[in-house]
Length: 401
Ligand SMILES: *Cc1c(COP(=O)(O)O)cnc(C)c1O
Ligand SMILES: [Zn+2]
Image (cartoon, rainbow, N blue to C red; front, side):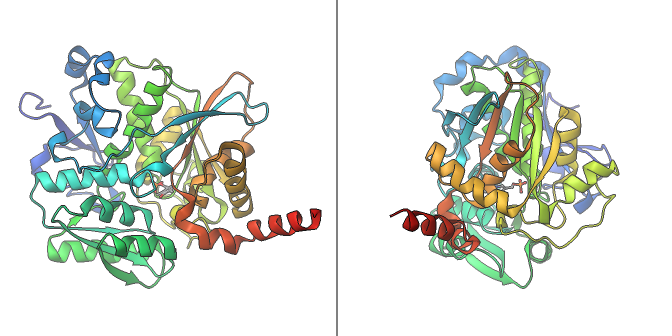
């Protein structure tokens, strides 16, 4: 450890090597795409120096936790990111339930937390071009955070990207490369272009810093619950970065002594995109099952080979949580449920957390569960209309007249 010279170190979760921040970019030079780095702070020192009651000196946004972020807050993009509401809701006899509404971020998804961090890091390193592979939200978030920053933004989007998200990305002024295939093909194309041109790559899983942005949502949840950790947190899983960030965030709060137990992390996947679920069921490690091309209408969690699978599996196994699979039908019906009962309109990928919670047999009536809502419903109107759930309901309503 070299904490006398630097604020944090990077530790590879595959080969266990340690690096200083300036020694490498954002992935392990030995393990490359197969590795994954943790950003490790000096928790002993932070525990003595930080006081959670002093957080309220800062505005309620993701930069409030800047002591636990790997970049100086002076580089933060100006858009208000983080600080989303936590609402109590009633869902049957399933204990105390809260929803965390991150559909309200600047570009409409939780990805803004990661992209804000990426742009801050890029600014601190005088980067000129940032690229990303994305099914839509990560790209929209990145181009939103790049807007007006002078940083060039290149997006690798699969041809299946929702029209709404694509329009949004163009509106923010990104350069878009359409890639034949799905997310997995876009990821490979983006990586190749970044290596060749020396661009900064924000792609989830490859850029290990992205979980540092996403962990802030879990700091907020604990702060909003008066520093009482919930029993379970339900999270949709695509690349696995958000679930990985949940573990990282809660683990840091434990080390600071701000919470006293690790919540069980519940990762929810779509049945047609269930790599993590299969790997977890089989106890075969992160590479023990075959990737399959993904088939789900919930585009933001449609991933054949999750790029943050090391952190994702650690999160579920070390927290005592579970992976759950839900059908597209359950996902779309959850979109309507959340809208009707909570007044929050989310996209299918986000509704997976709610669908997973409904499917899960909550062991007692006393549990506290948080359902993470990760993206706005306005981002995939065409997917919702195509699903038929709205049409069926409308027909029902008409027949009542
Ligand atoms: C990206 C995304 C997810 C999944 O996050 P991962 O970190 O890829 O697992 C879930 N919901 C929405 C709306 C997203 O944009
Ligand atoms: Zn390594």
